[in-house]
Length: 514
Image (cartoon, rainbow, N blue to C red):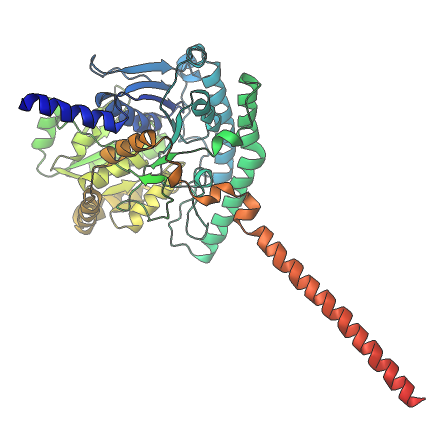
């Protein structure tokens, strides 16, 4: 009898959740492994928890067990056709204005590839329905059409903090006086000149989106769906934004109720190192320095003069170096340097003999370092790397050397300072404590809110009233205009009255004179 009661209770729980076996569509077309990794980690976990997942992306997942429902829809990209990756070390990626223009063209090309993909067209014509569409919020705004087409709840995943690309879509207040622009290197505590630069770039970015990028994305939709409504009808219909941020590694920012900080949800170490790496790290009692430039940048593409400078500095150290190097050989490789084309980063960061992490400043790498309490030397090259590195340095667990300002002496000094000064490790460990001290794990929180939105049919009660206002109403231009009209009317009436009074007085004086 007790078994039947137990089964009955379980049945009630499953029925009441309303999201068992939900159908989830992921859209992560950007040709960046870090963006894909962020979304794929979430969608894989949702599949493991019983949901039916379909993923549209430029990459494929091949490591899932057969008992989960996970379908890949791979987009064929230029990289698949010619395998030519840009060398970001040689490109001028430091100017935020030119970077914005580059992202304009990248976004238009990428979204056209998505909608022109035969597999995507087949899905769109299949008549399938989804409970939620979770999409990467990064220069792919026309993909908002998927949520409308499949009658699904529209969920965004921002791979970085709440920024000007996503804030307007949900009415999140973000004054440029405290909200640093993503492609700049400022923190929330800006000087006057930084606030001026930040405001100018914010205005440039908003004009670029409204006058150029959104119209281009609207063209992508209209070309493929002539009867579709304007892009704006889809863009602002967002039920949830999962933000890859947390106060342990970001400056705290205001968030409306539909925005949830789930920074660190991608951290999921296996706990095991390959045997050769395990032995290499275990015996390195003097310590290990780990060096990786991430998934989009490749160390083998470093300019020769910088590569040689790094090698000279490494050769002087007593510690061992573990370097993610994407080639078979490294001319001039010192005896204390071990190379590998691929390294299990999270497992390396968790090892007790690791002293510090030399990184490009990518956000996922920064988060993993904070998770394990590892200090950083950051060599940021482009994008949000500069901001991440500057923030980490401000919080005391990193030394920031922008790649464009790299000098051998400065790099050597930073390494020696970090290896002998315990304050960086102590600050990293304090950040790690803040990272872990939260009511639930970030992955559990992310899935909770996705299921919450599905359960409550879009959770309209979380959307702020600002979304019902036009832009001029939101910034009170109509109210300002009304006050100006009143002031002008009062001044005009006062002038008329004063003029008449003066005229009467003049006539009275003249009559008395005569």
